[in-house]
Amino acid sequence: MEIPSYPESKPLDLADKALLDVKFSILQPRVSELTFAGLYLFRAAHDYRLTMVGESLVVLGRGYSGERYCMPPLGGDVEEALEAMWGDNLDLYGADETLAERCLKRGGVVAVEERDAFDYLYLREELATLPGNRFHKKKNRINYFAIRHDYDVVPFSEQYRVGCRNLLEVWRGMVAGEEKPSFGLEVEATAEAVEKAELLGLEGVVVTVDGEVKAFSLGERLNTDTAVCHFEKTDPFMEGLSQLINREFSRLLFEDCRFVNREQDLGDAGLRNAKLSYHPVELIKKIRVRRAV
Image (cartoon, rainbow, N blue to C red; front, side):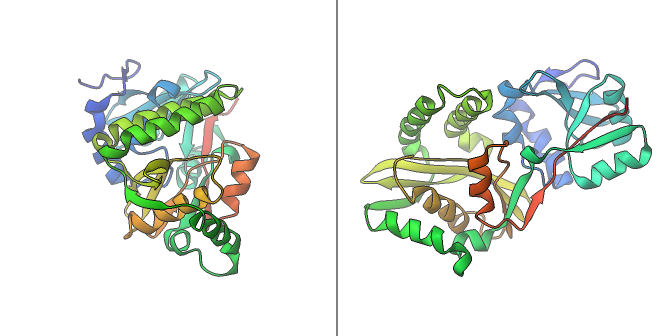
């Protein structure tokens, strides 16, 4: 389906994968949302739509509180595309520091860093090997798990799909009472990722205990030197399992990548502490740019 010119737009769908893959390959993004799978799997949560402003492909979205925004324009005249968005009072969401500085130089806009959305960037080799005293507690937890369970670590494939579904049912029960809609929407995005991993170009690892899936993670290449882990789910009652699946993703996948992006903490204090405890080498800023009032 042809992508209409702004202000018309169309819903994001699977047929758009080839086009967006090319655009992101040129862009070489550092922000975790900027992959086709990252957008497609959250298309319902954020009502992602595509439009053209001149030669620029623009992804339109909607926040959890209902506000409309655009992602960084892909190709064409970026400033022209942004002028059209700001003219309709749409914020630019997900700008990195380079794009935000470019916007500020032109004037008439304000930029706000969104700490809850910052991505955590790690050295893949550190996550894979957990070297030195800094990771001593992580290694202890993995050892605790390993001596108590007969487990296997295998690449994600079709044969583990049912087991992953069963594990997600546990998570559905856990998030059923959550006030934040993002938790439930993330579980549903994970469920679709499990079903369409091959179509979306996702790779993953699975941990089985006595033949039953107890943990899995799914991700993809974000740019030439960075992988991104989009989804990670573990049996919440098995101590040390989350540390194990974290390590195995980085040890077994994307071995030619220098970095792993493990996405944002969404302002959750427990998740923030967990991510910081792995000693990120950088927090990748996501900046919202809006027209100055």
